[in-house]
Image (cartoon, rainbow, N blue to C red):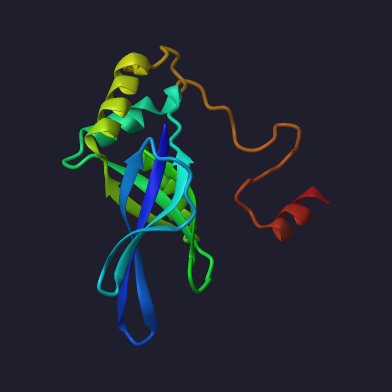
Length: 177
């Protein structure tokens, strides 16, 4: 499903940061965009920065289910600071998996923004999970019956003749000669 990524630019609160950028919304089914301004309120502005495909995978349904059960189900937008003046953020990807978002956050290279899912997207992800999710059955592992404590295997390599395995190497050399 194509998702339009909306980024908000607001004036910074310190002299070191001229602007503060945050992801403010996603637009399900959006067309292509390249930093088109959507709305302006004083110095703050919202831009339709990019449109990316939200890909859902059958192997990740457990992660999607986890997100759907959250208080406020969200999608995660992964951004990278490119340092440009007008459009400093590059939108890398969008995901509905909190586990994938955590993987991106672990590197420290990217900025992860959490945006609430609109109802249309929530329904799309819920339908996907309902269709493809298979609950894993827990199978308790059983211990085998072999008793390993009945016979001592010995200490060290049996091919090496040693008088005392705990003696220092100097004493060992004297005893062998």
